[in-house]
Length: 209
Image 1 (tube, rainbow, N blue to C red):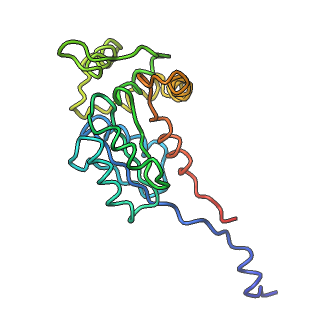
Image 2 (cartoon, rainbow, N blue to C red):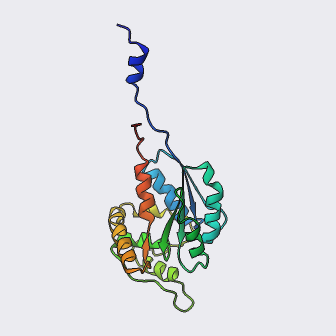
Image 3 (cartoon, rainbow, N blue to C red):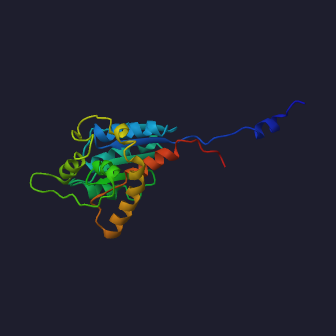
């Protein structure tokens, strides 16, 4: 018996349109490549554009995000706290935004990598000619495979660490962040896991309710 149009339409499986996402990275190499590889790992089904916009300070990165937000459903700004003088101004500019989200690492992105090797709440403050980020990277380079880690090079770190603590880092990072907020001492901590969680959430299409 032939099916009528109403019956056919009821049997269709509809999916919500997937959001378009922009990720603006402070890093031109290591952090950007890491997030590109992460989006491939999770087989993200959303349209993700991961860029370095030519700006390196938080305020100008946020201004770039705001200027481009009309073309995207979500915009993430992955930045290092480090010693940026415009950090507070950048955070204030988007504190009430429903579309632009800051993904901040204290003092830098590499703290997320360090968590692959276990829990850490050792603060990294500038000492002499070395920034907090310099000192953290020194600790990171003490681990096998990362002896020659260079923030300015594309070294495929995501794949290198995927089997060396990725799951552990995702478990530890939220606890570290909670402790940092409770103590009001954000150094060190990271929100990288929140962006990775978002990638994972978008790896499967959502049905229309």
